[in-house]
Amino acid sequence: MPESSAHAALVRTIVQFALRELGPLADIAIREDAVNPIRHEKPPRIDRYVPDVFATDVPTTRTLIGEAKTLRDIETDHTRRQVSTFLNYLSKTPGGVFVLSVPLQGRAPAQRLLSELRRPYPGSTTPTVVLDPSVTHHWQLPDAKS
Image (cartoon, rainbow, N blue to C red):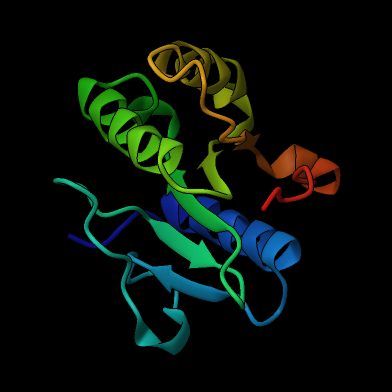
């Protein structure tokens, strides 16, 4: 089933963020058919889930996993399992970052979700970013630590 235009717009927000933060040579794989895949690559499966966006910089020092959620999908059990799986993967990945793109009204629930799901990984230095269309000018990740 094709993705909604709202979901596609949220995925594009993640791609723009990845290009800005990882550089123009970033290797970006996109799951969604509604967004033209760059180089026609699809993200790798992580456990049982395929993220909307999987990106690395060149040479690889950072790995970004991005997931787009519409308002109705933010607080589902599926989303909790999926995001938890991605956070677990990134907690073991040096230079990992997780990005959750949501509509403006979903920002607070998304931040609560990430705060709760990060608890099992207290030693993890994985940054998490919540994007919504209104805060694109505030994007910036901390410098990567090698």
